Picture 1 (cartoon, rainbow, N blue to C red):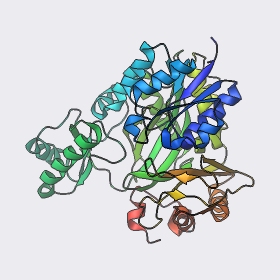
Picture 2 (tube, rainbow, N blue to C red):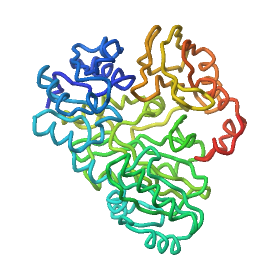
Picture 3 (cartoon, rainbow, N blue to C red):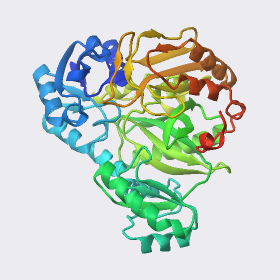
Picture 4 (cartoon, rainbow, N blue to C red):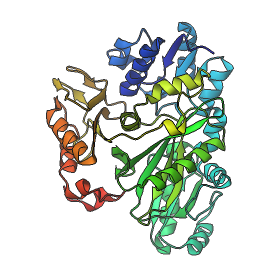
Length: 447
């Protein structure tokens, strides 16, 4: 089996640049696609070739399957890497790639369909022996049915979109009186966000940690995990800070959670990079939440503590090559933290696009910046507001926090507002420093 000749990256921003770097180190040619307003983007400048695939609107460019496939055929690319977001978990896109004899660097369409629908995913992992929260394993169609289920499992409950993600179509309900409005709102959001109004119900786990396991599989039946990430620092279910490893996990609990994640992946013959997400309650019980069938935004913290290039391994796996590592080879070294730097007002968290007229990245030992912006670059209003990921690595969590604080102080972005001041406050917060965190941290802390 041989590696690819040329890979088209069906994405933009820092993840497109991250994939191009991995391809260059593997000796693979790259093709960047871009909208007309993204012609000056760094991934376009760095790739070997580039193709404009449409206007600024994502639906007409980065979500335009026909245009992307045409670009791949025009440039003779034999594989497509979707990155995260956009078409990365679109089974139809993976189907089209297969029909056009272009390798989709990611899981199979079957994997995406099984794990992309939250109800089907719950049914699948139950069979694999993975613990889940009490709730439904089928969709809930009416308020009356929802009230009956809530009475059985007890309040609080959470209503979730079956095709959901990013917190949309998700409502927490504390009493029978508030259930009808929450149920209707969840279905409306789900339909608007995902084209599918179906929802399910599960017991709401109060003040849990959000702990996810990075898994990697190949086409030879091998699946391993690369340890966990703690993604508990969130705002409206959107992750802001991630770290590896989780400060409260014991070696025994890490092994159990890792084994559960591997079992879930093996149950669907998973053969790519992926993440199994869990909720961890105050009693150290963990419950399956969902599986993301793509590379995650926060994958760098796992790379920093394992020394494994996840993107390279994902590309190798898609090419049919076996994993180069066995489970016993995976060792967690030190501690890593990632701060997502968004072009947003750091108080209101509203988007703040515009031109960068001063830019300096931090450096020094154990500091990494994944970004596609540069001095005089214009942050566009058409796309996600994340413009950089600042990642640090140190021997201990305490040292990693201090290193992150130092790196944030060095990070200069002028001309627009960013969330850097917010991250500075978190790194100085006593509860965060003590590791006393959960998914409601930002709701209960005064910064």
